[in-house]
Structures are given as structure tokens and as C-alpha cells.
Amino acid sequence: MDPSTTGDSFPHLHVDRELREEFLKLREQSWYKPVLAFEPQTPCHLVGGFVRDVMLGRCYADIDLSVETNGRLIAEGLAEATQSRFVQIGGDRYASYRVIGQQWVVDIWDRQSQPLVQDLQRRDFTINSIACDLRSLQVVDPLGGVEDLAACRLKASSTNSFRSDPLRILRLARLAGELRGWRIDAQTASLAAASVADLADVSSQRVRTELKRSLHRTSEDQLFRILGSWSDLGVYPDLWIDRLDHSPDYLSTTLSEALDHQTSPMIHRLRSQLDRVSLAPDTEVLAHSFILLSLEDPGRAKARDLLRSLRDRGLVSKKTAEAIDLVLRPRKLPQTEAEKRWFVHRLGHHWTVAIHTLGLRQCGRQEDLLRWTHLVEDLKQLAGSEEDLLSPPPPFMSGGDMVTLLGLEPGPQIKRLQSEVYKA
Image (cartoon, rainbow, N blue to C red):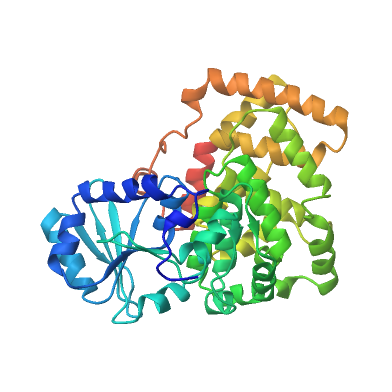
């Protein structure tokens, strides 16, 4: 495709006059003039997910800029001119800077004289490899990203895309979940699946951040699309299992049967549960709990043991691991009024996830699901009437108070004693 291609050739997108007007609105924001004023001769382009989202008519958050040189000078000047915060985000490897204003965030990537086309070619997907000149608003699209936007197609920018950064595999699944009706290009899916094992070489912090971004406050439809993409690409079950602790035959069985998103009974059961009741559970905790339950195997792997391994490898935060552990603890559905009240108050706002995990464990028949649905309605009514009491109260006594008032020696027993007092 001609690098000078403009949006006029693709009428199905949010382009042409509307697109130009959207970009022109940027000139009214306080960051626009300082960026161009500090280096009037430096080529500067809008790039990445920002351009993609504008072309799709989606809401956008951060504004992504690619400058030919002097990136730090431009970012520092912008921060000073707008009294905003300057942050270097590229570390020692990349010249990348962030300026955080009151109503906007601008990320500036310094290409350090690298040609713009090379910068676009190194990006993850073609739909993120589109640029727009900040001055002329001319669109630069060397990889056919605009055409892929029109076709609702997720396509890697190069055959080396996932080898250069395996985390892009998780990003691919997230985009497939976010963009309803889109499909992953067949060659891209093959390239991603071939690089799944390389995810083990990515820092746990980056993986944890991407998982959280994929799962946090996502819709139920998006959740199932992401789960399906993880299964199709082979991300599941490898990411959730420490291979040193499990035999190859167990992994093989798990991969082929446990989370086939087309036929798995667990998937259908969870869909039925979510369709029957309106609970809005924490989707991050729900997704990890669901996956760990799908990997349970009597005598070989228990969900809470797998969770411990996941936490030790740093793939979930301590707070998230504690929430998952909490919802995996109940082993039976509450029956009596006292049990229901204890269930709701013991689990707090996570009771909505816990009731789903119990449903997955115990509601294999239609009549079981019907009883489960009635129980959920009872719990919803109870939780609604006692909403103010669901948030955990402050500690009755701090660790320091226990040492001082009770004459105890500092140590791990203090935390255990605090826990028992809290339960009481």
C-alpha cells in the first residue's frame, strides 16, 4: 500500500471528514501547541492504539506520539509549559517519555532518527502500525493496517512479531476479546501458537500486568472471547501450570479437553449461570478461579495448590491471590439462613464469584442449576439488605497494640492471633 494512503479510500471506517474533525479537535487541547512549538522542524506523528481507536470511533485514553528526535526535550518542554508531570518510561533501553496532564496523558516515543516506516514495522499488529502526521493529518500506512481495520482482522505486523516480544500473544487475545466480531488472521494465530512457550521468558510483572488488563472489569462476553482465544492459541493451560509439577499426559488431556470453548461442559455451565443471574462478579478473580477449577484433577492437582504456584511465580498479585483463595475455600452451598448469612459476610463482595465457583463444582444437572438459581436470589436479597456490612471492618487491635497491651513477643504468631480475633 502506498504510504501516503489517506482515509478517503476506506469509507467503511470512521474516516474522511469525521476522522479529520476528530484529529482537529486535538489542536484545542493544551498539549498540542507546545509539542510543535519546541521543535517545529522535527517530524511528529500520532501512532499506535490512539490512531486505531480514533479510526474505529472508539474512546481513547493515552495519546501516542512518535518523534524523529529530541523526544526528551519535547516531553520536558511540554511538561514545563503545561505544568504537568514528566516520567521516563523507556528505562535504559528505549527513549520513551510520558507527560501526565490534568485531562490528558501523552506518550512520546523518540525514534532517534530511525525512519518512521521502520518504527511502524516493529510494532505488534498492523492496526497499530498506522501513523498520522500531527501537522498535515496525512495518514501513513505501510503495512495495510487501514485495510485490516475495515476487514475487522487482527494481523501481526511481521513474522517476527511474537518472537521479538511473546507478551504480544496475550495482547492478541485481549484485542480479540475487546473487538467484537473481529477475527485473528490464520497465519498470525499460527505464529502466536508457535511462540507460546517463550512466554516463560517474559518477566512475571509484565505478564501479570497484561493478564490484569485483559480480565479486570471486562464484560462477560469479552471474558468468554478471551478464554476462547487463550485456548485456541495454546496459552491455556501452560501459563497456569508449572510443568515441573505435572506429567505430560495430564497436560495433554487438559489441553485437549478441559477448556475446549466450543464443547466444554464447564464453559456451558458457567455461561448458563451468568445468563440466569445478574451479579456482575469480579471478572479477574472469576476467570482465574474458573481456570484453576478446570485444571483440578483428583489426586494430582487441586485448585488452591495451583493457585499457590501461580502466586509464587508472580503471575497474580498478592491481593488477587488472596481473593481467589477466599472464593475457592467454600466446598458446599449454604442451606440454612445462618449459613447464607455467614457465606455472604465471610466472603464480602467476593461472594458473587464464590457462588459461581460452587455452582461449577456442584451444579452438573439441570435441577441442580435451578436450585442454585433460587439460592442466588436469596443471597442477592440478603446482600442487598446488608450492603453496608459487607466491607471488612477495621482491625479490632493492631499488632503493636497486641505486643504492648498483652505483653506478647513480636513475631508471626501476632498475625495469626489478629486473624483469629477478626474471625471472632
